[in-house]
Length: 384
Image (cartoon, rainbow, N blue to C red; front, side, top):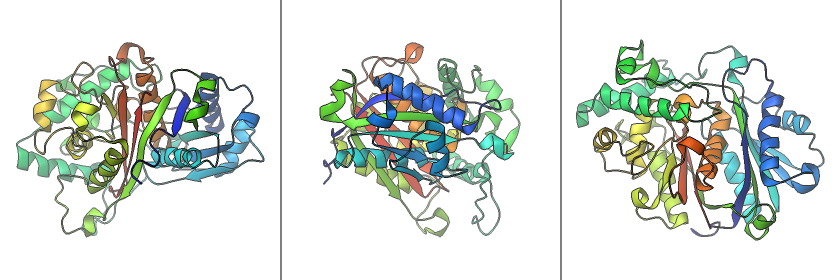
C-alpha cells in the first residue's frame, strides 16, 4: 500500500500567474494565466481534447467549479473543487494524482487559486476562537508557540529574523513573487509588532494568485516532454485540534509529523535531510518554518536555531528551503499555495529555476499546514 502511487503519475507542465495585489486581474484572468502557461509548458494545443478532468483548490471560491469551467471554456468533463485551509492546493494535487495513478484519467489539470484582496481584508479572515474561549488571529495563535519555544530552547527573535531575511532574498530572485525587497535582521527586529514576538516581517504576505500543473500517466509522459517529473508521494493527515489535545505542547505540529511519516514511507525515504535536495515548506510565520524544520525531520528537536545560524537552509546551504521566497515573499493566495510549491519544485528539478537554481536537485518536498493547524499536506517529487 505504501508504494501504490509511487512513480505512476508524472508532471509534464506547470504554470503560475504573477502573485500580488492583482487589482487589475479577475479570478478568471489568473486561472487562465496559470493554466495556459501550464498547457504551453506541456505542449498542449487542444485542452478540451487532451485534458480529461480538472481538479481545483480554492479557500474562497465564488462560483465553485463554474468559474473555472467558464474561465477555461472546459465543458462536458468533470471538474472538482476542494477547500481545506492552507493545504487546499496540496489536496487538489493529491486528487489529481490519485485520478491518474488509479487509471481513471490519462491527463488532468490541477489548478489552485484565490483572490482574497477582493474580499476587503488585509489578511485571512480566520478567527481561531477556541484559544481558551477567547478570539485569536492566526498571528496571535502561532505566536504562542514562539514564546514557548524561546523559553524551552533558548531561541530568540534573531533566529526568526534570519528566516525572514532568507525568504525575502529568495523572493527577489523569483520573477512572479509578490515582494522583491531585501531586508536585514535589523529591519525585522525594528518592524512594528503584530503579535509578540512576531513583527511585520515575520508574517507572510497574503496575495492574489493562481498556479497550475499538468499530470499524466508515466507511460505517456515522454509524449509531452523528456524531462518530466515523477510524483513519489503525496499524503494528507489530520490531527486533534490543539486546544482539545491534552498532549499538545506548543512545540510541534502533529499533522506535519503524521503526514511526513506517511509521505516518507510512500517515497522510501528514511533520512530526509540527506535524501531531499530542495524543500518548500509552510512559512505563514517565521516560527512556523522553524518548527517545520524539526517536524519534517530535517533536524533534531531544539536544533533548528543552530542550523539557521549555520545557513543550512539558505539557497547555498546543504538543504535549501523556500527557494522562491515561500509564503513570506512569493505570496500566499491560500488555495494556490500548495500548487505554487509544486510549480517551484518542478522548475528546480528540471533545472529551470534561474538565479535561485539548486545544483543537482533530484528530489523535492512541499509541505502545507492548515487550520490552527489540524491538517497537513505533503508532496514529494523526483526525477526518473
